[in-house]
Every structure is written in structure tokens, then in C-alpha cells.
Length: 474
Image (cartoon, one colour):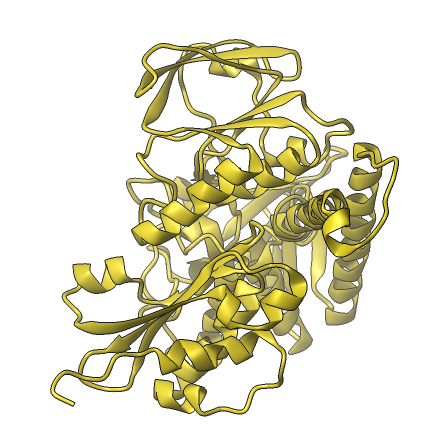
């Protein structure tokens, strides 16, 4: 990593490509272009490699797995295992997570070194079209000019603006993953991905947990059977849900005592806890980086305005990932990188029409690829549906993990697979099998007739696709 040096304001350093932010899409395009012999700089304020390896995806899944181990220990009698003296050492949970993060950061530094891309630590912002100023932690200033510039600044947790919220100093996922003790009572604002995953993990460590959400059901955009399954999971885990509720005001301070007064089904009855987690959405990191000086327009929601090629309103300036309004998944940001990679080489790759598979890493997982019933109905697409319990995959019985179901949507007038929804163990891996089949244009009958290894989870696709109703009239 090259040490920053002071540059004259009237003499910007020239680069073929400058990337603002070292997140998933930004770092990969930087490494790729640098390996082609071009001069590339990546400006990163804090997290080398972006949020995913440092404070988000991978750290949270690391902690979630520790919680899974705790859950299995609590079920030791069920597995015929004798266990005594069970205790949660949150400092040790945190240390395991930190060791993983340290290894990932080291891996990223090696990738920067081997690719030839220059990593510049500091705060960057546009000061003119295609010109960025970087202020290093030691105060040194550099001025950089890029033939191409990629904005990859990501997003951050939204903290709702209600009376007392700022004074309560709520945790975000960043601070929660750094706790060294189990909260007495964690109150979570928001029942989305982050809220649900961390609610279950912290509950399994021994905390009392309450989720407050403004919607009348969890996962309101998904099919009702998924909402019911997630809500039953919370009930079985001892997680309290306060749905159709909005926080009107907050008293106290997170980490000590915090009290939330709500309007909704429970009226003004307050909920009191020891810690408060803000998990009610994300805000793009687009303010304060001089986009107006670069001719880069924003959308009404504050994302960088891009077209299907991820081009901004400024010539030669692109935006990727969360800040560009792409679906907030690391795997989608990686595909944003591939779009730029191919288009920089003369291609015409676009964001429209691409698959957006996802997985909610609760235990069990909820994952989907393609259409849900809700989406199919909304789009007026006729379909056939097959649904079987997870126990139809015999592997789940060997694991004592039979909760959940698999559901497939098949076109009404052909054997084309429209989508797969799984709520069950290994759901994220299961949908990948069907995702590849969809991309290959295979009919559902190909999976129904496949010889899968016994006993594995994909073997459950055979009874699932065997349950597809025949086409009308056949």
C-alpha cells in the first residue's frame, strides 16, 4: 500500500480508472483492470474490501453459526449427547469473528498488491468532473484524475428520525457484532433480513428479544405461507413480535435502559429493553462526496442515478452496488462488476432481466429464485404449483431438521420452471440447483428424473417435482 503524498491542487495525478469505495463491485473491477496493465486507484475510507467481509455478510454469518452451535448444544439430549456447564462467552464469539475478518482483510491486501491496483486510505470526494480529492488520516491531500471513475460507496443502516431516537444511540449491526456480553433484552426496529437473522442469533445466546415492525406480517412482499412460517419460527424461538407497530418516541439509552412508545395494535403500551438495534432499512452513501460537482444526478431516494449499463449522468462515471440502487446483495454487486468488466471491453451487458436469487440466513433458511406466487399473480402469469414438506428430503430426517417446505412454480402451459421457494435447512444451496436449471432452460421433468445422491438435500427435488399437477386438459 503506497503511502499518501501531497500533490499540488493544480496538478492532479492521472489514472486510467479510479474507484471510490472498495466494496464488492469496486474492488473486483479495480483488480481486473489493473491486471491489464492500466493505472488504477481505489479510495477507501475505512473498511478494506467493503462492508461484506468486515461488518456485514460474513461477520454476521460467522456469529449466526456460533448461535447455531449454541442451539445444538441446548438440544444435546435429542442427539444422545451428554453436555454439562453450557455457557455463552460473547467475548470468545466476537474473537472468532474478528479472526475471520483479519484473515479476510489480509487476503484483500494481497489481492491489491498482486493486481497492481493502488489502495489509497482516506476520504475521497469529487471537486470537479472526473477529479477527486483524497484526504488521508494524517491530513495529507492528493488530487486524482481518472479517465473512468466508478462510485462504489455502499450504504449504511437507517436510524429513524423520531423523538428521542438520536439520544438513545441505537446499535446498528456493526456495534451489535462487537458486543462482548449478551444483552438482557434486545429490542429490534425492523423485521427484515438483518433484524430476523440477528434476532434469532442473539436469542439463542440467551437474550430476551422483541422485534418491532410496521408491517402486519413478516416478509410482507413474500407469499403468506412464508410469513406464517417465519412468524411461527419466532414464536417457537421465544422471540416476541410487535407487528403493525410504529415507534412514536424513545426514552433512555441503548446499553442501559431504553423504552419505546408505539402506535399500533398494542396502542401506546411501551416496550422496555436494555439494548436497541436499528434494522429498518438502508441509506445509500451518496451525500458529501461532491456528486453535484461531477454532474452526477441522484434519484428521489438518494441513490446514484444509473441506466441499465450502470452509467451515471456524467460521461465516464459509473456507479455500482448499494449506492446505485442495485438489490442489496453482495452477489448482485459482483454481477455489477461483471457488467462493467464486459462493457469496458466493448460489450453490452445490462442489469435488466437478470436473476436475483436470495437467502435469509435464519435457521432454517429461507431462499428463493425466480417467481413467487405473489409475483406471478401480480404479473398475470398462469402457473402450476407443487409443494412438499422438507421431510420429503430424507436427509432432513437424519439431521433432525425437518421444519419447513419446498415450493415450485411451473408454467401452466409448458414444463418451464418459473421459481423455487424453500424454507428449510440448506435452502440457499438447494435453490442453486434449480437456478442453474432455469438458466439452462431445462424443464422441471429433467430434475424430476435426475439421479441425485442419497441421502442429500437435492434428492428432495424429486418428490417436489413429482408433485407438479398435470397441465390442464392432459
